[in-house]
Length: 211
Image (cartoon, rainbow, N blue to C red):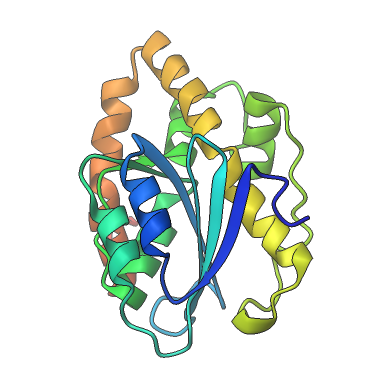
């Protein structure tokens, strides 16, 4: 039930070697995280979700106090695979803060949406996926207790899985739109800035560019 995906798995602490090998052959992976809140250093990382183009989705439960996930790190740091996030700035900072993972290369669908979908004021994941993929996401479990990682409900796992399942399709549509509007190079330069912005957020300098 939580998946409705071709393949779905839940892991504790790290992905399995089998899934790491499967993901390592991907040109792109959709990635998302769930945390106890939005403040890096205070609110711990609880869950990491990944999906590939073959609709293989997994959720990795991160234990309190955990500081490493070697196979996950190898996959997310591979320069052969584009990692696709929606609002990458938060997830990249969360992964670095909790597990020391320096994610690269990156495609952020929120940045891409703002550059490509200038006709719309709605750039949240739900609205973007509905327009670009024709799928209505259920966001009912968005604000819930992710800290009980060993007791996550089916509704929470379904929410987590669906947050990554449609990102790759959205990326493909957005790439086409960006190329059509001659903004793809600009988007790529924005994506290259994400790790620096994430590091500023981690060190609580997120407002450094404010007037």
